[in-house]
Length: 111
Length: 109
Picture 1 (spheres, rainbow over the protein chains, first blue to last red):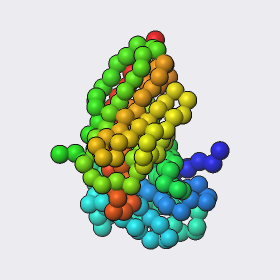
Picture 2 (cartoon, helix red, strand yellow):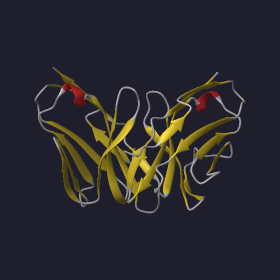
Picture 3 (cartoon, rainbow over the protein chains, first blue to last red):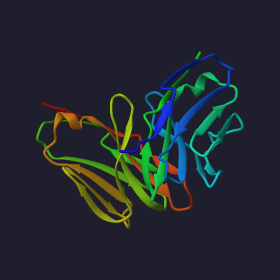
């Protein structure tokens, strides 16, 4: 069964460093999403991406964040200069017909 | 006030019991999702609803659009159903999905 894959599963980084989280969505899906979940809190929407551009973003998704689909298969989330409060689980999801398919998540720890 | 409210926050039940988790929302939606998050953190989509009722195995989800309310039912609950169940709504105006805080379900053998 096709699945959304995310790498890395866990990344530890120093505050101020750039981080790139990678996702391979399911191949025939058209909508892609990034969500985050701070430990013990609810899942939060970051950004949606359709037709090679951002279709919607939340207040959390500020200038420190960017998304890209560099090669037609990968979907990346970049955090330019990480802060302690960026520590969270980041989930990628892809969608077709409205159904959501989530990756296993990438845990980011900022020290 | 949260746009998506779930109740209860925590639920412990004995194996075999009938489980109901409720979700109320305050925004216009195009669809409502029920998700399951396992202790390891992974999230699985259980249902997507825009009206009526859906059933998959022992799981049943219903939605009342007029009352802005949805329920997730689990019949003949089993310890492997222990997880966090999350209600999430897709806003009518776009792609944004708003999540509830989740209901932590623990089924005792």
